[in-house]
Each structure stands twice: as C-alpha cells, then as structure tokens.
Length: 298
Image (cartoon, rainbow, N blue to C red; front, side, top):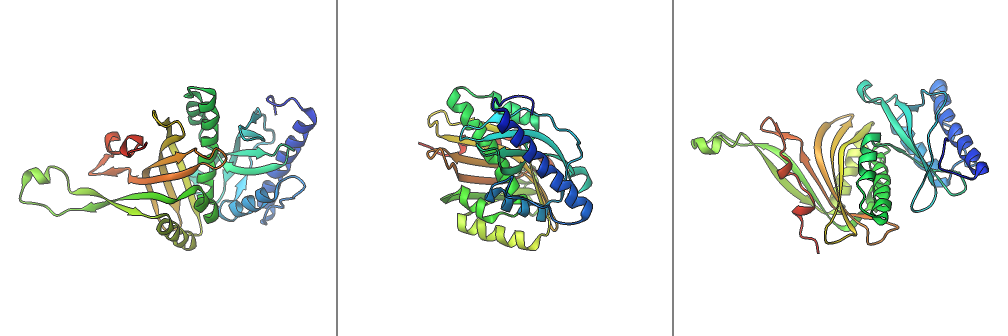
C-alpha cells in the first residue's frame, strides 16, 4: 500500500490480510480445494460472501506483488482497487478482471467485489460537483460493484435487500412482426421492443429460478454513467451496458437504475429497467434508452 493511510500498524495489518486472502485463492486453485478463509483476518460477512463468490467464480491472483493506494470510504473503513485476478471459471476472453477489497476500521477484510474498469471509475468520481456529490459517487461505485458481484455469487438476499419494496422493474423484449402490405409500416423494420413491468416479488422469484438452473453466472457492467437529479439531490440515475453470461443463456442490454439516497446508510433501487442492446440490426438509440428524464420525480 503506497499511500492514503497514516497509521503504520493498521497499514501493515491490511497488507497482511490482503496477502492472506490472495494467497488463499492461489493455494485453493493449486490444491483443487475451497479457499481457507480465516475469521482472524476477515469479518463474518466477508467470509460468507467470499465463499459464495468462490462457488461460482474460481479466482487466482497472477501477481507476486501488488502496490496500490488506500482510499478512505465515506461510511468508514478503507479500500484498495485495481488488484488483477484471473477468473478461471469464466470464458477465456472474460478471465482477466480486477477486484476491490474493502477493510473495516480495524483492518479486517470487510468484503470483496469484482471491480469496474479503472478509467470508468475515474470518470464517475471525477464528475462530482460538490463534496456531498463526491461522497455519494464513491458510495454509488461501491454499490454498483456490490450489485454486480451479488449476481456473480448468486446472492439473492443481497439483491432483494437493495430494491425498494415497491420498486418498478421494466424489461424489454425484441419481438418479430409480420410483414405488412403497407410499405411505410415495413420501413420501420421487422422487429419491435415490447415492454413488461414486474413487481419486486416477481423479479426476485424469476431470479431465483435463473440462479437455480445456472451453474455459472458472470455479469459485467460497462459504459457506466452517473447523473444526479437536477431538482432532487437525493436521487441518482445510473445507466450502463450489461453483459450477462451464464451456463444456459447470454445477452447484452442497457440497464438503468434509479437509486434513492434518502437513507444515506442504505440507498435503494426504486426503478430498474433492461433494454436489448440491438434490434433491427442497429444499436438502440440513446434517445430510446431509459434515463432520469423518463420518470416524473418530485
């Protein structure tokens, strides 16, 4: 750890604990066993989530030395980013990824997430307009990384906890339409996007079925943009491209999340939308994608 922490004793503890975590991954790969996650160097919650992640994503660290700066988190604790890993259970073109390690105030590993791309992280954090906005953007990055990793480790309880009970979930589906005698109608293309709304309960029930029938799930987020609502500073919109990979099904689409920060300690998703990346042989136009402007927010 190169900078970001003044307490030398705490720094050494964090370095030791991070090293033990990465070594446990590599040893488990070599021995063909589960990693030995010790409560002496991680919290109870971290132990459980790491073990759940391992069930779905076998991870190794190819580096013998990691040098990264420490970031103090708005809600307490510390974070190091950009730790290169190899996800051995993923397809070859998806194996090279990075993780983020969060530490408690005592230096214990608090949780591990699969990271956003570093350049996207810098863009999101750098777009802040105030100290409050900066802190919230840090929380959003952490939130989005936790959200993504929860799918990868099939953590239905976490996903359920971050949605508002009355959340609105909208999913688009490409449908084929019959050829018409009207040439103007045909000029619109042979595909349409049909939208379906779901309640939180319906979405979670469907996700449980998906997790059950897929041995492997790998969700990646790209092209992430974060916007604060101009009239309501506790509301943020996150748009991203999602690549869903699993044992039985793969797709790419655009996701929009409307996140409510009324409770700073527990932001929640009020709206989630998914739209197909392409239809009629073209990428979905930006003007057709859901955003903060799509909803009447007071």
